[in-house]
Image 1: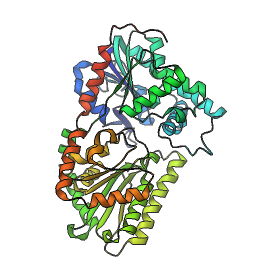
Image 2 (image 1 turned 90 degrees about the horizontal axis):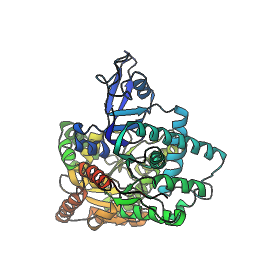
Image 3 (image 1 turned 60 degrees about the horizontal axis):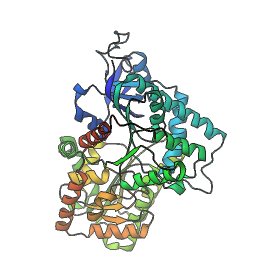
Image 4 (image 1 turned 120 degrees about the vertical axis):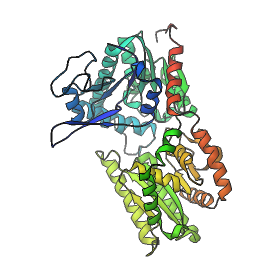
Length: 487
C-alpha cells in the first residue's frame, strides 16, 4: 500500500517510552505547526509521515512492528501490526551512531550554526577529517529517508520534506523517483552567501544541489528565501527549475485561545502572580525560550539589568519572568550556555533583589500551561533572538494576552517581517538599546498597548498551521505535469 501524500522530518508526530514496570510501550503524541497542519487534510487522505526513531522506546516500537510496518502487514508479537500501531507513521531505525553523527555532528553543530551565524570564527569552525566522517553519516541518514520515501510513495505522489536535517534528501529522492512532486521547507533562517561560504566548497555545492532536487522550496520569510537564492547564484549559477515560495507560519489561534483558558493555566496564573508579588501592582516582562544559543537569553537578562540600573524607578515595580527550558544538553556549548543563563539571573537577583521583590523569576522546567499563563498576564514580551527562522512566541503572546502586551522584537527574528509595525524593535546585540525598548514598552499607555496587541494578533494568525500546510501542498501539486529540465 502506497500513499499520495508523504511528510518527512527528523522528529515524528508520535514517540514511544518503554515502561520499566510492565515492558509495555506508551505512545506520546507531539504537537507543533506541522502536526497541526497535517490534520487539515484529514485521515481519508492516507498521508504517511516518515521520521527517525529517536530513542530506545521508538526503536522497540519499530522492532515490535507498532510503527514502520506496512498497513497490510500481519500481526506481530508484542502487539504489533496495523491494529495496535500507527499506520500513518513510518519510523526509521537508523543506527544510533549514524543518527548521532548526522544529527548532533552535522545538523545541530554545523548547519544550525551556519544558518544562525553562531560561530566564534577565530576558533571555529574546523572542517577536518572528523567533519568528513560525520558528513558521510549525514549522507547515509538522508539516504535512508530518500529510500523510505521512494518505497512508500504512489506514482506522482507529493512529498514534503522538512528542514536542515534533510537537505540532501530531495536530490537523492529525485534520483530514485523522478515521477514524484518533491517539496522541501526550511524552518530556520538561511545564511547569506559570505557566511554560507565558510562551508567547504564541495560540501556547500552538495548541500545546495540536494535542495535543488526539489520541485519547490519553501521558506518562512522573503529574507531567508533571497539568501538561499543568492547562495545558489554564487555557487550553482542559479536555482534552475526549482520554484521558491514563502509561507510565514502563523499561530494556531483556535487552539491557543481554548488551551489558555483551561483550569491548569488559570492555576499557574495565580501562582505566578503570587511569585511576582506587589499585590498586583507590579508589571511583568516575560520571555519563553529554549536555552538555545540563538535565542539570546543572556543579553536579554543583561538588558533587564541595564533597565534597573538606568531607570531606578522600575525597581520593585517590575519582574522579569524568564522561562529558559534546557535544550541540546548533550552538546557541551549548550550546557555552558544554560549555566550562564542561571548565573546571570542569580547575579541580578543578588544585586537588586529585596526581601519582598525578586527581580528575575527563572524557570527551567518545561511547562506549557505555565508558558500560556505567562502569555496571558504579561505586560511586555521580550523576543530578542540573534537570528531566528520565525519565532512563534512573538506570534502566540498577542493571541492569548488578557489585557494587551507590548512586544519587544529583534529585527533578526523572522517574525519581524510581519510584526515590525506594531512591535518595539531592537538590534539584539545592543543591550543599551534593548533596555531603552523595555522602558518604552513598560511605559506604553494601556489603550495603545491593547490596540497594538489586536493588530499583532491579526498579523500573527494570517496563515495558521492548517492553511500553511495546505497552501504548500497545493502549490507543489500545481506544477505537476511540467517537464523538469536536467541540471
